[in-house]
Image (cartoon, rainbow, N blue to C red; front, side, top):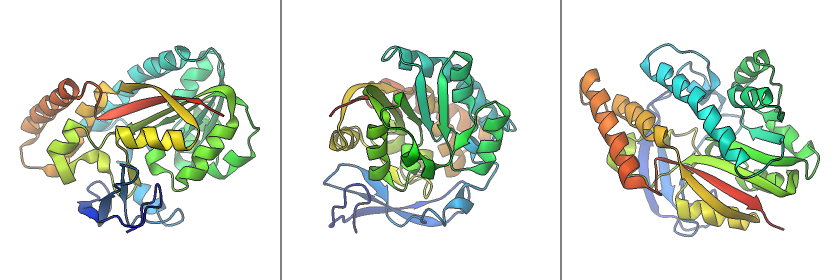
Length: 290
C-alpha cells in the first residue's frame, strides 16, 4: 500500500476501522514507517466523499444544539473562540486572517468582531449558508490558488487538515499566501494520545473516511519541515479528550448512557493528565521559512 502523505510505497501495517457515525462501512487505516503518520488507505475521492458528510450528526457543518453531544460541543466552541484568538495574538499583531475549512463561520465572525480582516474557505454549501448568515462569506477550496501571494498574517485550520485530499499541494499554497513573517496554525487529532490507545478502533477521532490522515506529533513536525515551515510551539486542546471520549463511548456502546458519561469523563481526564505534551488533539504553531 502507498502512503497518501509521503508516497512511501511499502506500507504493510494496517487495521480495519468502521465509520460509526454515518455510513457504517469499513475502511483500512495504515501506518507509514517513513513519515511516521497513519492514513486512511481506501477513502472515497473528492467527488465521491460528499455523502459521508451528509448528516445532521456531522457537527461542524451544523448549528443544531439538539442532544447532549451537540449542546456540549457548541458550549465549548464558544469558549474556545477566545482562546484561539488569544493564541493568534500571542504570535502576531497582524490582522489579516485566512481560515481554511471555516465551517459555519463561528470563528471568523468572532475575529471580525475583533477588527480582523477575514477570509474563509469552505467546501460545504450547507456550512457556507450558516456562515453567510453570520456575515462571513466563504470561498471554495479551488479558489485558494487564486488568492494574492504573501497576503495573510495567519492561516488557521481547526480540525481541517485531516480532511484535505490535496494535502501537499494545499500546504504549498499556504506557504505562498502567507506574508514572510506569517504564522500557520493547525489543530488535528493525535493518534498517539491516551484516549486513542484506550478506545482503539472505536476512537471517534479516527472518523473514517472523512479523516484521510491520522497525524502523530513527530509526523506533523516532519510534514511542516518538508513544506518550509518551522514548528515553534505545540499546545494541547484539553476539551477534545472529553468530547472524543464521549463519542467513543457512544460508538463502543458497552455501558448504559449514564455510565458512558462517567467513563468518558474519566478517560478524558486521564488522557489530559498522561498527555501533557501528547494530548488528544494538538495545535501546531509554525512560522514560514524561505
